Amino acid sequence: MRIDILTLFPKMFDGFLNESIIKRAIEKKLVEIHITNFRDFSKLNNNQVDDTPYGGGQGMVLMVEPIVEAIESLKTPESKVLLMSPQGVSYSEKKAFELKEEKHLILICGHYEGFDERIKNFIDEEISIGDYILTGGEIPAMVISDSVIRLIDGVIKKESYLEESFSNNLLDFPNYTKPRNFRGMVVPDILLSGDHKKIAEWRRNEQIKNTKAKRSDLLN
Ligand SMILES: C[S@@+](CC[C@H](N)C(=O)[O-])C[C@H]1O[C@@H](n2cnc3c(N)ncnc32)[C@H](O)[C@@H]1O
Image (cartoon, protein in one colour):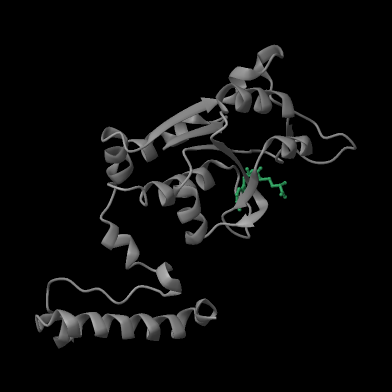
């Protein structure tokens, strides 16, 4: 998979791309990530990419032209173009599984007051990572990239993500590690029994219990 991220703040991605699982996925060539500063596509003085809103009002609006030119320089028939926007459909693990099947994602990060509305004619989908407003689309682009990359074959073990929260609409079961006894709080005996069938049953029951208690909406 290839992911292109269009942003005005490329340095925000330095840590994200150079640590842990994402770094290893890039090194193993399981994913290719390219960061493009769409300021480079401005034809105006000082590489201007934003201006005041028509009709008046607060803040600056991102111009349509440099972003569209950046998209067009990267887009192929296999690309899916996603706009980071609080007005988009809510992002979910289900969506991450869908996006994992794509060959090429182009993620567009807004800033300031957001985009000139005409950008909507050049994208496939608007995606929101939640009902709150961030200063820019960089963190949403990292959220989407991270959640998709970890599902790509070879990045982490398949068994790891198939047992996690939201797979099969259930939350995860409780996990424990050493020490066995921490201040009187002990690890459930079943996990030390060595009986893998019983452990699997216990974990499944705990998943259902946990989901009922915390997110009964998932069971519907
Ligand atoms: C300050 S926000 C603009 C919000 C816009 N004026 C509105 O009310 O819909 C700047 C940019 O951050 C990104 N952004 C902010 N919150 C987001 C969210 N919850 N999900 C995805 N992107 C978000 C978008 O790219 C947005 O264009």
